[in-house]
Length: 339
Image (tube, rainbow, N blue to C red):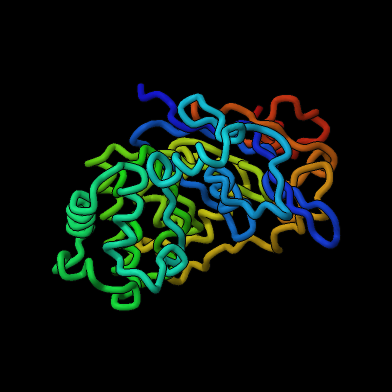
C-alpha cells in the first residue's frame, strides 16, 4: 500500500467581504498517495479551487484566512513553514496547472526561458543544462519542432499547445504532487482528450500524485482513482471511482450522475437536472447545505449538520440518510424499512 504524501486535515478557509465573513471551505479532509489521482468535483463555487490554492498558499492575503485545520506534505505542515520555504516547495515538489494557460505564462518571455527559470532556481542547473531539460520536456509533452519552439512566445502557440507548455513547466522539476485546476475546460473536446492522455502518460513515467479539480464527470471517469464530491465548501462524499459512480450514497452525488449524458442510453430519455441553485455561503447555518435542493430532506437535515459515515473502508458520506444516529421518527418509511 502506497503511503500518503499529502493530507488535508479539517481545513476551514474564510473570506472577508463587505457583508461579513464567509466560510468558503468547511472542514475538508482528504489524503493523497504517491502516484494516485484524486478528483475533486462539484458545481462552481463549491470550494474546489480555494482548497487547491490553500495547499499552494496562493490565497489572497488581504481578505482570506485559513481559520482552522492543517495541510501536511510528507508529514510537514505547509501552513507553519516560512514563505521562503514554501516558495522552494512550489514548483519543485508541488506544482499547479491552471485552467487558462495564459495566466501562468509571461507573454513577454520566450517559453524556453520560462521553463528554464524554474529549473535554474529549484534544480541549480546551468543555463545549458536547463535549456537541455526544457527541450526534453517540450518533446515529452508532444510539442512539434521543440528546439525551434523554445524561442517562441506564448502567443505563437494554440490554446492546446500552450496548455502543453504549462504542463511541461509544472513537471520540469519532477514534482511529487501536481494540482490540475480545470486544466482542459478552455479546450475543445479533441484537444481535451489529448491533454488528459498526456497527463496520464506523464504520471506513469514520473509516478506523480495528481489532484484533479473539475466539474466534468466524464474527465473524472477517465482519470481518477478516487473521487471527492464537494458541495458548499464541504466534502459530502468520498470514495474510489467505482464506489462513487456505481454506489453513490449522497443525493447530491446521485444528482450529478443523473445530470450527465450517457452515450449508450436512449437520447429520448431526458436528463435530470438538480433543482435550485447552490446556497449563498453567507446565509449558511446549521443543518445540511444541500437540504433545500434534496428530494429526500428530513427534519433533522434542517437542524443538524451531518457527519461522515463510513460505508466501506475508503467510502464515506455526510448524509443523515446513511447515519445510524438518525432518530427513526425523522426517517422516510422507505429508509427505515431498509434498516
